[in-house]
Amino acid sequence: MSFIVVIPARFGSTRFPGKPLALIQGKPMIQHVYERSVAAGAQEVIVATDDKRIGDVVESFSGKVCYTGIQHESGTERIAEVLIKHGLSDNTIVVNVQGDEPFIPPQNIAQVAKNLMVASTQANMQMATLCFPISTKSELDNPNVVKVNFAKNGKALYFSRAPIPYDRRWMQNTQQMHESAYFRHVGIYAYKAAFIHQYIQLAPSHYEKIESLEQLRVLYHGFDIHVAIAQQAPPHGVDTPEDLDRLNQHLA
Image (cartoon, rainbow, N blue to C red; front, side):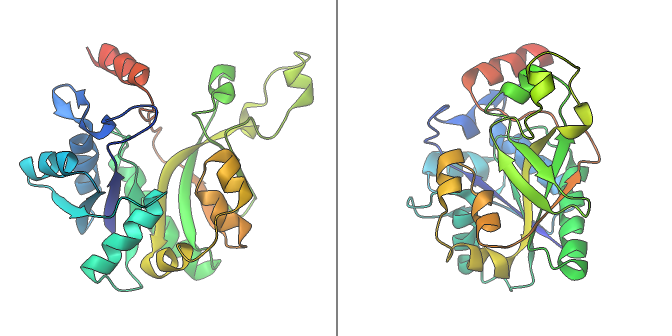
């Protein structure tokens, strides 16, 4: 199986400006993500950015950079520009690895690529992603932890920053949390290049704008996303400076 990894990375994050360059054990976050993508067996790994500061750091550790425009509103839109500039074929399997997942297990990257290959052939699903069970109420209540519901065949039903499904009895403290009902979305996507080009032609949906979740555009327009439980427990990504402080303290 052949796939490439593209890592969208921007400097101007609202919650954490300069996040891709934040140091973890003396190494920039973007380098951790890059090295794990290489370890997953990707044929090629490309960092897509509109910021020379990020590009310079990636090139300093011999990584590959593709400079993109500043107008993109999502990682997938940024990846589409990379595909055009590199002339990649429509059948290329592309894995979108978020630049704030410094310790994502390489096997999860390979897993989502393989799942896309199978799901697109057997069930005509256009995207694949991963999830992992939620076991604490604090995690469930955290809007930075995206939740996902999916059907028996792995088809995504909905993604939300809110707790879904709503367990009325548990929320009213009359019973224990149904752990098997809650899954956090692991922010990694696989799709073929042809669908990425199709995605950027789709109008953003109101659900996407409300939740600030680009994958909801796919569901709104009637396309299917395959969801599977990650083979290895993925650590949480870094959303805020506080997350980075906790991570560095834990590693120390």
